[in-house]
Amino acid sequence: MRDESIERIVVVFPGALGDFLLALPALRTLRKRHATGHLVLVVNDPLRSLAARAEVADATASLSAADTAGLFGADRVPAWLEGRPAVYSWLGAGTGEVRARVSAAARGACFFRVERGDGTMHAAAAYARALGAPTGAGALAAACRLTLAPSTRAQTFMADLKPPVLVIHPGAGSRAKRWDAAGFVQVGEWWREMRGEVLEVAGPAEAEDPPLLGSPIVRDWPLADLATVLGRAALYLGNDSGVSHLAAAAGAAGVVLFGPTDPRRWGPLGARLVALRARTTAPDGIPLASLPAARVIAACQRRFALTRGDLDTRGRPGAGRSAGSRRRARLRGRDEPRELLVLGPDRAAHVRRSGAAAGASARALRHCERARRRSSHADAARLPDPE
Image 1 (cartoon, helix red, strand yellow):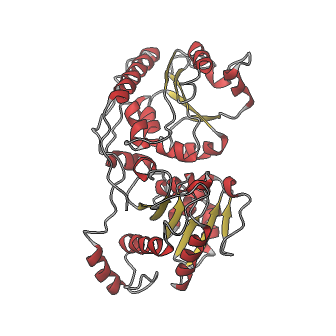
Image 2 (spheres, helix red, strand yellow):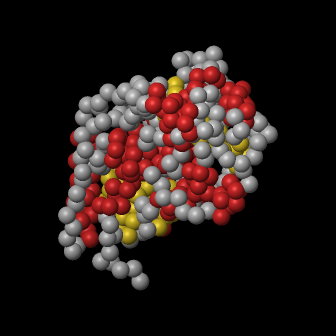
Image 3 (cartoon, rainbow, N blue to C red):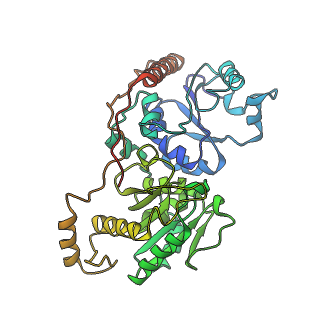
């Protein structure tokens, strides 16, 4: 029998991998706000193991399960809406029917929109501000990190590779976001010439793409295992994609390439991954003419030098430290990564708890709604330019 004295919270987030990781600071705010309640996070199936790893919920449910159809006109509401929980939903904000069904089944509900399109505020800051949570760069970067649990599969796989390992992810959900594959080949060849090994990552969006370099490949791995691989890499290079956001959350150092999207709004959180933006873009991808391989290699050299400390004057992975130290001394102060997050006012959200779960939920939802309304009228700070 369910203990009715325990506060029941449901959080619905329909976004993909990159959206989820950008919203992670906001989701962690909800977890803290309802620390004594039972919180269920409803996400797409591939994200459930990652959500469990992030410790933002007591349980997860599948947004793609058959009973979710109940939100769109079926007779029965999903099982996770039973018992009249308090609901925070990024699904239904613009759909009257869904909003009405969720509101009717819940004790209270607050709706938000998944961030899309252009804007002057980083998407992670926008998610956080809607909940009245801190939006400063440091707070967001800290809240986006994942604790990497041991992965036997990842550790066994990486043990067979000769370090230092460069992980490349040439894909992206949109063709327009993809840098010319020939560029990744050139970077991979440079790394091999400097005695490093290359590992390629491919996901569902790259199901039809052949391997680029004949190198080892990680294809369609569970996200928790993939995060461990990314976190153990010496360097990461990828496009604007969910995998790049996962690399940032895992603590990887490297370079993320941008074309039509603005890294000041969509860049991975944290300072270990630096954004590099093409001068121009095309519908079928980012051409080498607008983002030359030499420019990308130079950025990779700087990242490797600043984070690993063993780069010689020619940029060779695995070289002696003395030359690398001299190189870093010249780089320090002019090539430090520039923060891509909005530096907005920190707005900590605190909810006083009483013995009544329903009262706590109602106050939290009202607080959330006030924060959302304030954020819709707030002026976003200007963001610095990427490299």
